[in-house]
Structure formats: structure tokens, C-alpha cells
Image (cartoon, helix red, strand yellow):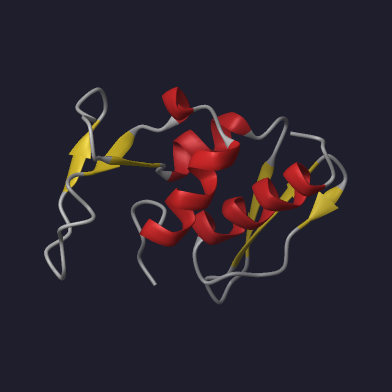
Length: 107
């Protein structure tokens, strides 16, 4: 799966955990959208826009993280002596690690 940023569901959860200024994109008018999801770039978030994170922004909030990839295009993240399970895209691996570290009060 080729994914450029966190999903709406992931973004809603991360907005509760991460500083909003760490987001580098926004879902524009996401509550009114059905299929046409528009993504705005950095600094263009307005009222009603949902912050979302690309891979680089997610890695920036994870201290000393390493992204591993397998020959069959799966990804996992290593951070603070913890690993995620294998995912079919790196954004989901980062999301899992952020949730894990947040639950353990390490992030």
C-alpha cells in the first residue's frame, strides 16, 4: 500500500498525542468530504482542518528510531529498544510505535 500520510482515523488519534505543530499537512474540510480527500501543505491548516503527518514528520517525533524494511516490502520500526510488528507501509509502523510509547508514557 502506497501511503503518503496518516489516515483520517490515525490523524484524529495523533492529534490527541502529538504537538499539532509537528504535523506537516492537513486534511482540508475533512468533515464535509466523502471521497474527495484534499490534502493541504504545511502552514495552511485552518479552522476545521485536521492535521496529518507524513513519514518524515512521524520519524521526527520518534527519538533515535530506525526503520527496517524487508525484501517483500514490509516495514517495522525500532525505537527505544522496542519493535513494532511488520506493516505494509512505514507510516503504519510509525503510528504503532507512537501509540506504544505514549501508552508507556515514554513519549
